Image (tube, rainbow, N blue to C red; front, side, top):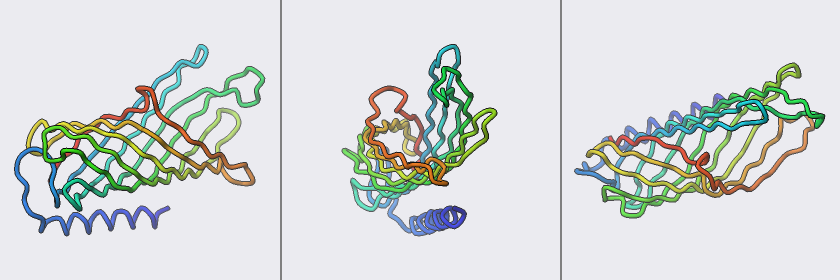
Length: 205
């Protein structure tokens, strides 16, 4: 995992160094050669019986436009939360705390990128390591590989800053459920509610 993180960091640093020679774009919007920093945050809260469950996710990243409408993007994923599960199907709920860390990389296609307002669709591959700690029963760490097709919109509030919102869209994931002989879980999902929307900012360098 450390090697993966160091490799991603090296790629980000190289991209940043190469982008210093890019042409200067002026005004709001994006263009070929633009380098940007981005960060999104998501939070959800639900009621499980008499208990309250919640979760959060923070995703800082960097992107670079390789064409007028196309950007490559890499992100780090940091997540956590608390849930309640009927582990043994006997009606008793156990508190489950989760913490996780991962990386994601992919591409984004933008409609009207040079405008104040733009829409985007992306495709990315992610790898997450998520630890589940069940009160009184111990913990386990799952490795999750995912493919996601997020939809996004961006609105520039100045020449350099934009507000962004990203909807989870269509996704596929494979979870080893902690390994050690556990059956893998594969799933397809389509985020259709507000809990699948993350909000953030973009800073164009």
